[in-house]
Length: 96
Image (cartoon, rainbow, N blue to C red; front, side, top):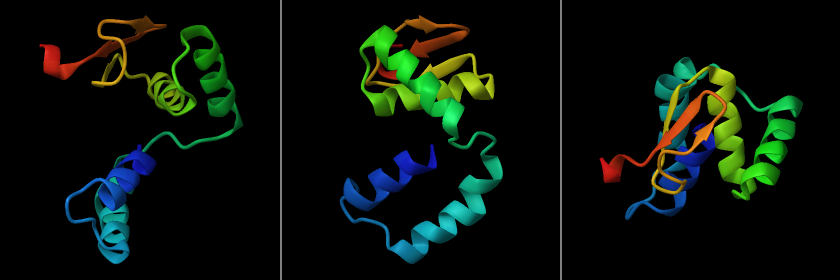
């Protein structure tokens, strides 16, 4: 979820990262670990998840990417703890 990291690091950090530093982080650390990139079917799946769960589209997009990657667990403090969507279980790590 490179876009989520970029959004947080540019807008929510006490001292936002510079664009140059963020670009280096993406290139060196994040890009090599990404196996799922948005495409038309991810957006369709996200819309189906949104319709079924009433989650926001952006949260549904994260879930769709996690499902596509084959992940079994998605850690999030923003989504319903212990909810299962297909093979994916949502866990709030702060409730453990």
